Length: 478
View 1 (cartoon, rainbow, N blue to C red):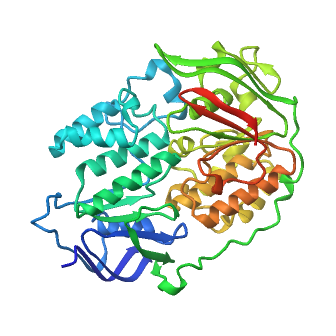
View 2 (cartoon, one colour):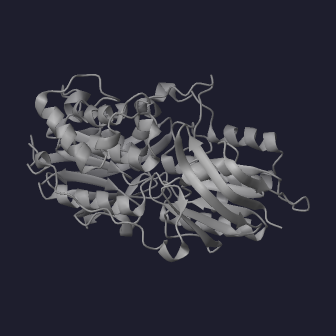
């Protein structure tokens, strides 16, 4: 008997039909993958199955009373949503780096302890998961201190600890390094072997062996199997004219770090960092989850207060010699998963892109005529012009990320800091954005690009820095 049976399923948002007449069956022990472009309805389908969205048609779940797994459906969101100790989500981007506010949220260990008690789960099983996903080192960290990859691991640990009969994971590999992805796939294979039904919402190619069934969505409809391999390629457009001009460099020395270290109490997050970045160089920054990448970038983007306690020169000026953080930020275009988390929820798509002119979290200033022209040109280039007046948060995740990528490049900065910029993008959007990076790089912009997978990187990169446990292990031409 099928665990999940769907026939003639429809989901409506107001007058808009998001899912159209879907029908399929999932059995216990099977692994399914939902694919499709951003906005095709993948997450909507996952939420409908888990009961978070109202649907019409038949959606029937028959749990097996003989199964050792709990008779539950668990939907794991693409992002981990948490609150502080007072139940508030009102965090800000730089908060994770301020030592005096490091006790504002629960620790990872406390979060897991509470989850285990709530569901009466085995501590022995938890230890297995923590070891497999290499997660012990962050147990004493606050929730807002850990990176996007470590947040994803926390979601996965909880889900695989619970092991419901039906598990739906939206973007399971977001932020995970190569080793963690492989270990996760091992755990997912074990889950289906134990009788669990798995549904992954993902366009990734490195899937678990159990992922043998596929649903490809296009505009809310299931694409026939013989056409599922032929997803549309996005046609590259001419680059906006304002991005053809070279950046106006104030110094040929973009970054200079000598013996840099960052620590909290007695714990070193970075140590013995020596790094030079010259104008026009394009660096790949890599390292496993928790290696210190985000902390290193925060020193560059003027978000970390410990920059003043180190020998760091940015754009030819030593930190602490009178240059404000806004003097630094006006030379940098930044995109990161954390910036996306904390972005203004009330900003429209246009306002989100325009905020890049002012390095703000949303648009709070009027645009000059030339800025309005640049904004319109970029919206059209990114295929976002038709949704320019919609709230950023109402767009599919992939289009939200594209809008913030537009924010990054709108002022044609001297330095682009692209921290996992393609998280949440499908393969077509990833290729599109990396082609954009390659094209922009021809004007001489300096780039720091964080990405885990060699197959998903722009071709323009010239140098490589790899961190491990807060130390440099590779610093070389790429």
